[in-house]
Length: 72
Image 1: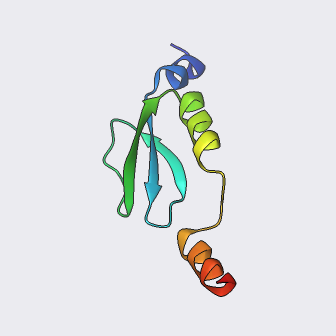
Image 2: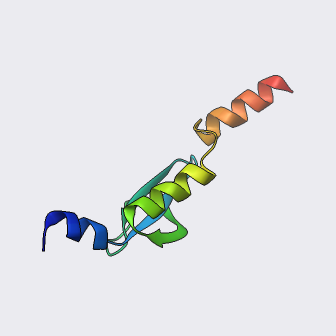
């Protein structure tokens, strides 16, 4: 099996941290500290597409809150 085929068969999950920043992580590995499963699992491309759909504001949550407070 080629490395390309292995990569296509690897199952990933979408993860996010407390700052609502998204990434992908191997589905068969324990999550790193500070990261939580979002609920989506699939190929790398599927997970990246999900992130592109839901992560529309790339600012960390703490920055968004500060900016909202300043604007109010």
